[in-house]
Structures are given as C-alpha cells and as structure tokens.
View 1: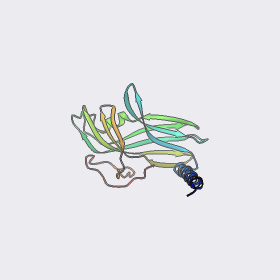
View 2: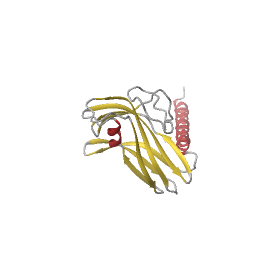
View 3: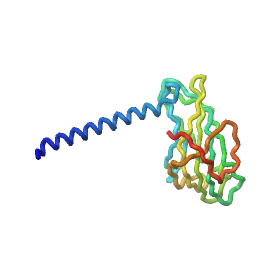
View 4: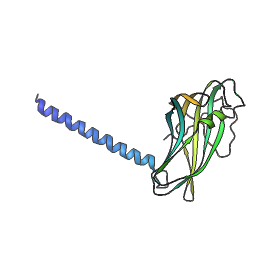
Length: 192
C-alpha cells in the first residue's frame, strides 16, 4: 500500500468535506436572514451575566441600511410551576417596545420583569416554558417572528437555569387570551 497516495486521498476528502460544510453554513445563514423583506433584521433571545446574575433579553439586530420599527414581543408561559405568587399568574404578557432600531445597530430589551409578571410575581423559585413572538414593521409591511422556545428556571427576577426546548410550544394567534398556563398546548412553532 502506498501511504503517500493514501494520505493525499484522505487530505483531499477532508478538504472537500470542509468546503461542503462551509458552503452549507453560508447557504443556511442566508436562508435564516431572509424574512421576506430583503432586510437583514434578526430578533433573538439572548442571555448575559450582570453582577454575577444571569439575565434574559430580546436582542434586535438590524444589519440593514434601513431602520426597522419594533412594535412588541408577546410572551406565553406554559408548564408553570410556582409557589407563593403575589398575584394570579396570567401566563401571558405583551411587552410594548414601540421603538425603531436604527440601521446597522442593535437594541437590547430586558425580558425578566415581563416573565416575572406573567408568572404572577413568585416569591420563591419557579420554572416554566417560554414561547415568544416578535412583531415588527419594515416599511409598510408587518412581520411576526416566533422565537426559540426556552425552559427557564428563575428565582424572582434572576434566571438560574436556561435551556432550549425542542418540543412544540404555544401556537400564537392574533388577539387570543391564554386560559390555562399550567397545561402545555401542543402546537408547533417555527424555530430559528
């Protein structure tokens, strides 16, 4: 067996595989950026550490040449497990943003208080599955974009644990009230 020839063949296969992988990543990135408007706008849920505490926020990335008007984020909590709540849990909150994201800029919006209020302001640890939908306008056209679904463990306004949940989340419908937050609602949502 000629080891030199075999190593060249293996290196060629490795290079071809790497090229295919990078081409696929570039293609998938373009597919994820296309929201139907031709504008490069990416709302996403992000996590950051602030003063040794983990925080959750909506990050609005606008990489386009035009400003994007962001109206609101709607949050629905399912599978809520909480004790000693200060109020009845609505499991549904709409956080009005009503702000333009300038071209080539990023706007962070904290979600911890919105989640805390939707859970009924628990005084101890609590957990839930969070589904969310961002509504925004580009020019005169409105868009809705579902966010990834997360399973959260929180203590008051602090996130103590977070992981992405791959199961079906809440299916958003316009002007619908959420009735029972402890029972998961089986419906699929598009994850980014």
